[in-house]
Image 1: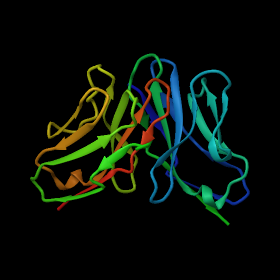
Image 2: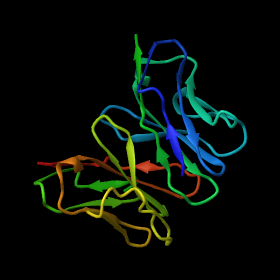
Image 3: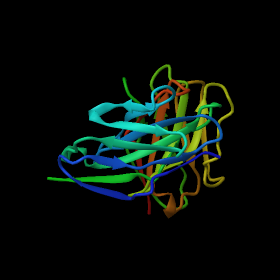
Length: 114
Length: 113
């Protein structure tokens, strides 16, 4: 069965500093990996995805994520955090070998302080 | 409309009553998901429809929960004999299927008194 883990409930960073939000996954086949963001009182929005190819994928709002097959990880990163990046971030995975469901992690709250 | 539409946006019901939640996906999207999000928690997978294939119901928490989808259009999630622990935001999402991204609705906030 597929699963995804976000080991940190909350990440705190200062504005202008780099940020990392961690995600690890487990699937039986090749993974399709996603990051979504949920801003306060707003719906979930897609940030980026990894399907195949370059291990470093770039997405919306300056975010990027690195796929690491040996560590089964897909950490979300941004070189310089903004206060407006404060939100709830979800990692998600589906097994690319079939038409299976998309499973989400428990979410990580990112707090960027001025 | 251009996005995923859910109704009602809010539903307050009494324990033991049945409720029906509706989702209108984006036209042409073959995949449709239902998730539950309890306050301050993550997204809990409930059910997944993909085209005309049999739905994946593995996330439904009990036999009080059921969902239907007619073709590639509207879906309804029904909760029978609601309990207080059913209180949550119920999110619907649709996509073109495969590796494509999900588009989420604004959700239905269900409160069971």
